[in-house]
Length: 250
Image 1 (cartoon, rainbow, N blue to C red):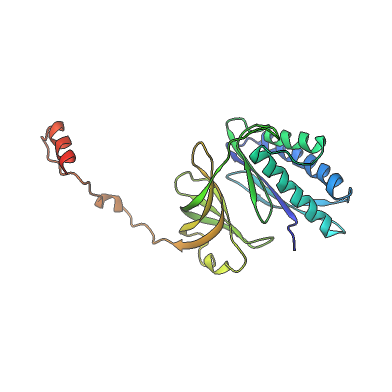
Image 2 (cartoon, rainbow, N blue to C red; image 1 turned 30 degrees about the vertical axis):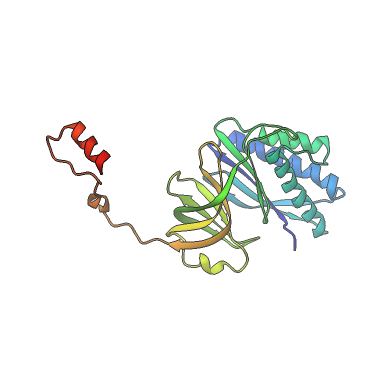
């Protein structure tokens, strides 16, 4: 069965007016795609998830013919991919206008926009229009640590991780059959391995796909930092050049 949900995510410092404007453009985009790829089928888009931290909204399409919803969802991701890579795509000028309207909110404070469905995510990181070269997000295998705050299995299994370094929400997508990886992890400090998509400028993680493992980390001991030790020996009265020399000779 194909996907029947679309997700729009704005990363960075998102103002209410900007988020509202982007959602209005999203409505125009799905209306244009519905007319173009679904034969103007009457599709209702219901909000099923709103996440704080990165301003992420997910909507489920409902129509008499489910296959038409799936075509719109697939086309929506194609739009995001075209914006991400700067490649052209065979949709109308109306679709192009609405898509460019969404990415026009990349203003320095909003640093990335995510177009996603249940199967994949496209990330746009500049105001380049469709058909123009655009910076690509960094995709690589990696590890994130943080606390799991939200679990969801509706329309795909995923969880929200607040990473330790940036304290921002990162959506992590699991594959069918991986429920056991997170069954006892909600609210706990974990280490997650998988394919991480990062902001090319700051290195901040945006989302994770192809999760390989989720490991619960032991709780941190109170005042454990007091046991930290340096690699250099130092005595009161040592001259700076003596400490540098020891470091060099070590």
